[in-house]
Image 1 (cartoon, rainbow, N blue to C red):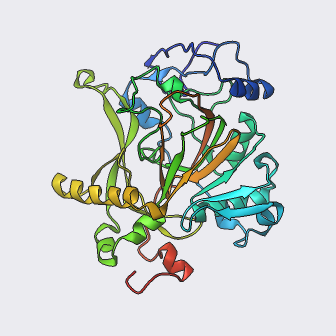
Image 2: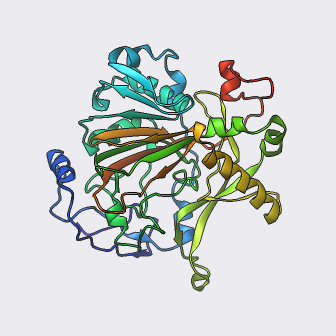
Length: 377
């Protein structure tokens, strides 16, 4: 099948490169077991759109989003009673659920998992027997599946992206000083009109050492700020950009440009009702209404709050066949490339798009809602 664009609105496209690197054995075994056709090469790359104006039209309409976590049993009785154990990995972020297969969850358990992710930011399941098709089906429970206009995909399953650092290394030079993979603090798809909600990454192949992923809590980052500083940023909006650049059709010689959207700097999660700081160093451009010097100063401080407070982070050590499900509305993450490409790492990712970000001045912080806030909070 010849590569085509993911949407008919993309007429002007570039033909994708052809990949020639070999799949890790465990990844190939999983894909073949799932009936994925690898005969035409792997992964499948859609024809890449060239122009910013075309990409801006993709999903540029309002879609109603009802968060499954908002209708879940607050006690999560069905999910917790079926698990062997549920272990919080740190005080503020990260939980591991043991003894459940994601493909077998009931509808009630899916709702409760959605609430658990909304409360704990990222949830892990080891030893998962899940196909890319089942991964996509689970993702659809949490929202509209994002189909990326140029990211490599599992052949025949639109919306299941391939996360394969060795593949990325064929596109740009990587080394110790300029690491590969997603080794920078970021949040996925912030440029969307309705950005990412729950992302599910399943890694079928991981390095024997290194390759950890870190997540930081947006709830806790906001709570680290003084009440008076919160007043400065509450209600402010910022410009967020895409990860990939495109050409301006009206001025193609001006060089690559990024798709930009305006969203709240502080947002509220619809399932928990808690405020979260929502910035990331990689893709937050500027605060609307401030001079560049003012915006740079405030954003630099907010990035540092996220990145330097290790008590609001979780660092996860992967094992083969592990799934991580996190909420992009309340986290940033960073994949360590400390293994330096010496070992293969391969996974498949599904992201559900959520609501248009919103701010509510009356919403509490997480610690306020749980009754654990100090007198200075």
